[in-house]
Length: 166
Image (cartoon, rainbow, N blue to C red; front, side, top):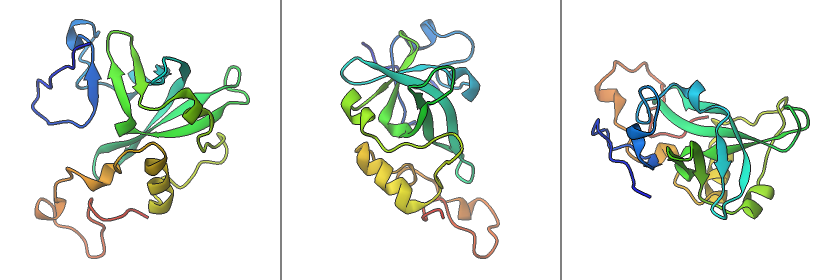
């Protein structure tokens, strides 16, 4: 399956496979509304359908996608378990209109999760580091972030994007 090249030259970190804009409707797959990805299936490395994207979580400060929240199990949203997935662990498959997750379904089955009424503190560095370790991905804040201090008049005490978020 071909890996799509980035026509914008943004040097993105998200892998996109398939025929790209040949099979995508609208402006995708390089620039998309987050809502168009919600409900997309997530397939594991062993080919099993393990859930659906429920939310896309942004690091508002840096403008990066931090995580996708996947819903697994349950029926019509009742009794489902939510899992935060590092964005770097996902590959967008434009041909099959799904995401591929770089781990087995067994790994997903044993993954730490949460319920819709008890979300973790996703900006907590300890929580986020454990999550990235579990999925064997580099934390999204550790690479390729430009230094906004040179672009903005930063108030005293403001965290830079390359500093841990609390």
